[in-house]
Length: 362
Image 1 (cartoon, rainbow, N blue to C red):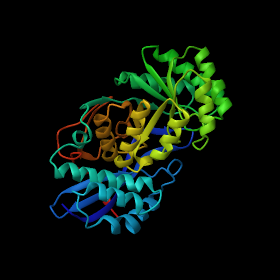
Image 2: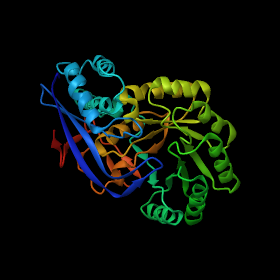
Image 3: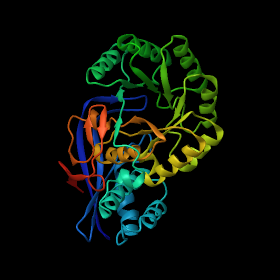
């Protein structure tokens, strides 16, 4: 099964409501789709999310990396030689993790098709079903409380609350939500790098004193400030999850060796796909640190791959894969099944994607 052609396209999917964090406001998913064809007629699909404020990868950068570097490197290679392809993919251009992720996902899709098996089984086959949280965008406290209740009415019991914009108001936001939803609902908070280390400790201790019962706080400080991240981890009882601080296995090892966080968040757009995500999983297992699997604002092609990874590995204990359910429609035919918070994989070969509606080739 040799790679003969790599096509690039775009999809545009409106969100149900605007997605607001400490870093950005987004109204629709505008992603790049990679379609890899082989001499056997098989097609593998991948997806890249341009998220410049986090990965540095823009739409033009993703297209350029694929056209100028990745295509000329892997076309002609045999899917059977998975390791060789993925090493070549990861060394043909520096950084550009989103472009690499899209191609990596399509390669794993074809690898599953080659052996007529779903990818999650090839990677470990730990389970077939997972349960995701859902994100509550940062707004005024009353609006966030209402959005939280709406999510609960849709069947969600774990909410990931976006904060990091005005620490005093962040406390009011969480108090309003906890008052509205009660204590049977699990609350996670994500500051998206929005606080300074001492500010983070102050606000999080206030949440502890208020008895708001927070499961964990995600990326409270700027990504590069590992000392600041460790300072927060060492000075609060709420567990800390490292997200933007970790792109590569080397980043994960640095966090683990310095005990700078309690948990690790894996996102395929940061790791460059499944190949490096598996290395992070192995490191986390060695150190006994649980992982969360997350996503950017992505449609179901790339989230599909993240679901398979989560179903494969027991070290992934927390799921934040709500990208497709935040969309107003699902353009992907086939793949994993989303039933609000419940996500399940099928036994279709690869990732099971059959086609993508509204795909515009570039």
